[in-house]
Image 1 (cartoon, helix red, strand yellow):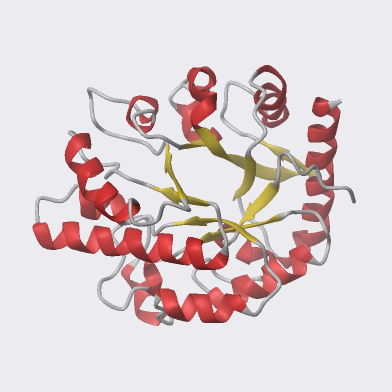
Image 2 (image 1 turned 180 degrees about the vertical axis):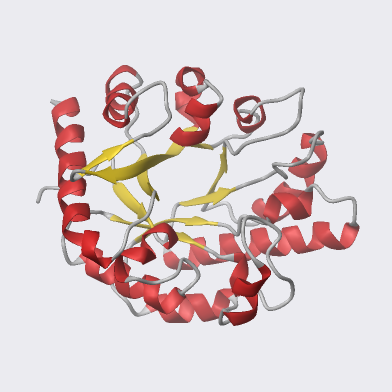
Length: 286
């Protein structure tokens, strides 16, 4: 299959571990699924998600159960690099541990240091694996007030050490009454647009005004009849892709993130859905 080089298609690693009947925090199982996907020639590469469950110091702060942390093998950034370095897996972007925003928005200085270490590990991996982009959840989604200037100052002290990597801030949810995901993310040089959050906050159209800042788009899709669909949204999955490619003229990285439940029996349907996505992009580019 021909791959469109000016708009690489990537697959977010952890959400698709289920295609091999693996848990999202199973690093070895995830790598096996990535190798299987790569053999189908349906993606240009992957977004490597660093899981907080791999951290030996503290259990995850977000979206999971303590039990997952107790049974998950632990990996340092150096361990992950050693595992991936000799495998033929193109890593196009790295996604930092989702806990970084909780650390940087904390009132405790020790948490700030931990957040900077989380940022450093992700950027280190991106640089060493040749990924041009590193994605960050940069605020605590439950915080009713985000001191963005403080967070930005802490974060950039680490990020500025890695000039070869574009740090990209994702439009994750916020409980700050005086801000939205768009107004927070747009304050940074590079932005990752997540379709689910953009449509949930009715901000999808707003991102056209900062298309020059977008370097990654998370295409959130649920597999349905060998196609990707965006559920509970004001626009369809394929409409969003068409808009981004045609009206906005976006030619950067497209990263597919799974929604819904999948397992190994869905693998062939997944392959066909990826081919359908390629067809949509080529048709839009015609």
